[in-house]
Image (cartoon, rainbow, N blue to C red; front, side, top):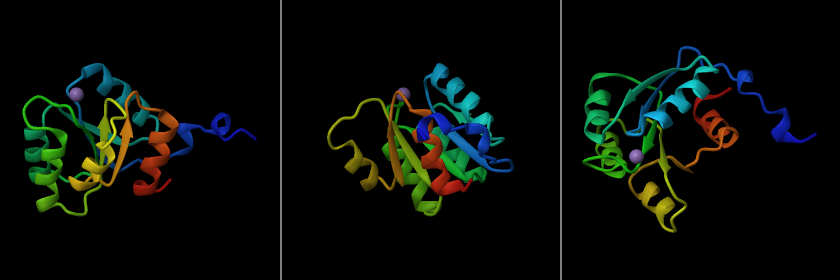
Length: 134
Ligand code: MN
């Protein structure tokens, strides 16, 4: 059986879990919210790295999907800051291009994993499963 064809996002139930999406591009956020919403997960949205840091100081989430190219400080810098006070909070970097060295920069910043845009939904959901269960 083709594993891609058998994939169904509705097989995942992340009700009660919270994901913070840090994304300055609104259509990208809307896509992620619609996709992730099928799992029952609650999504929260901020548009800058600075907002992400203050959001995490005041709120608990289970995971962050962090865009790297953001206005102001980058997603890498925001991740470094957040990891100072929430070292165990999983952060997945989303980068626009498969630039050589981006994966290394993500790991160096403290990101737990890394996915390239445009985001492949099967890859994203399976990556999230390693942090959130199924
Ligand atoms: Mn961006």
